[in-house]
Length: 268
Image 1: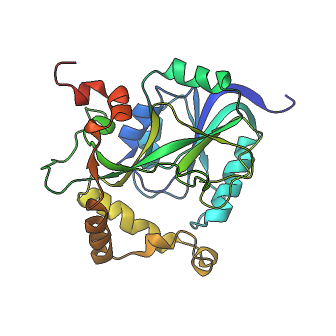
Image 2: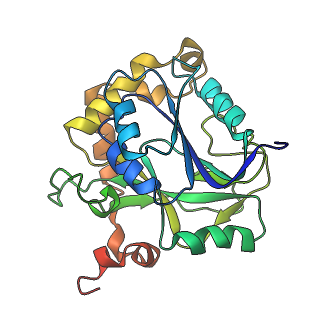
């Protein structure tokens, strides 16, 4: 079919040994997107099995990029984007797109008459004084953590803090996929990508962060792409402490309250 298959909303994601986060991530996004293309980058854990279990109607493909190379990973994603028409979004397994009403959200993208939007990111960072316990799989992860840092746009400076959602042939992304030379608008209504950055800050997430570094390609290291993944456990803990000084209780923020009224208002 000329121009690719039309699917209203498609989510694309690479994964490598993501068995901890994938159950939450798949339960969350299969409710939001019509279709998903999950690209396995040589996982050795139960990730593929979990994808089949939680998203049996989504595609699983094997990545042609076995090392973690930011440029090659993004090129692979853009080649896949060309196969489909409709709204497309590329997220990592730490990133959860959140909106209050799916139909209203996707309708608004058309109504606002843009082809690409940056959805603002909230960096989720546990407040060490809050007393969080390990999250449970029976409850959405986005409802078990509510401390973070909102990355606000600061016009006229360009906004590199979002994740892009578009209906172009492909996203034409710069390395890291936070920017594109395509014209885009920051989506300023209540919708965010919750990035589980230093949250939940437990053994499983520390292990997850430490496993990526050894798979970085030489090219990525030489060009300082993705080298934050090379941190040691001690460095990770120091970075976490650094970010805890900026984390806030999101339940006090009006836009967050629109997304999660049940978390913010006890009698909702």
